[in-house]
Image 1 (cartoon, rainbow, N blue to C red):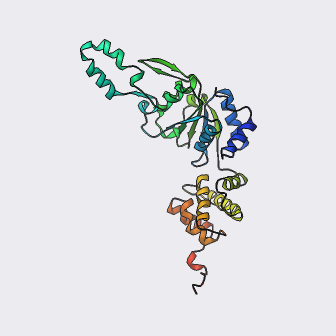
Image 2: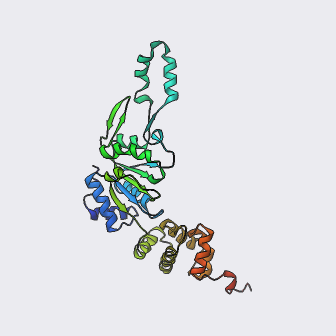
Length: 297
């Protein structure tokens, strides 16, 4: 196990120092995953801070972050390891007169092994956080590869044998719940669901991440984003988009959150035209053309 943290309070303090403000549930889950040596599976909507939590743990623990970004079609060669075929071919050509049995012993060695994120994390002797990001985007077959890694913290390579972790990495798996993950995988993990933060916590996040925002705007910014999330949108604004909006208001030197300002910057928060129309209708945002404009004289 990694033993990065001594208590839940220490998790809270050190993550906060890494610019991540955790709830009690998040801090407790991180502590237990660290103390029990279990992978932490985090589910929740996109943009609520799942990936950022893994990065913050790495920063707080002064550990190396190794990331496996999942996608449809990712296979063993991209996730676990592969052989350097070009280099093997050169060696085979150079030793062509020695026979295959002798040559085989030379080309399936560490010299020709290319470690991908899973194997790299297992072999790393230093403190490591292994982030398996957006696992639900990968094919089910990848989960089968993960069972040995997450259950026994080892990797079996037929040509070399079994490689066991010298120091277990702290493992974080994230999912946007686009598909259900297997029960076998979930049995090996602790589970944490991260939802959109409370208004109070989101205000604190905005103040921490965008300190240059006018203090009077933090409250209406969070209140407006919260109102948008209550609408039946195709994509609700995430925490990351809240922060982008706050930075937008700073760039515009906005002093108040008028209807015209909200309407003209909706593209920072909402990414579908149907969502724009719904927000304008439900939030009763006036057309900027209908508002009085300052005289140019």
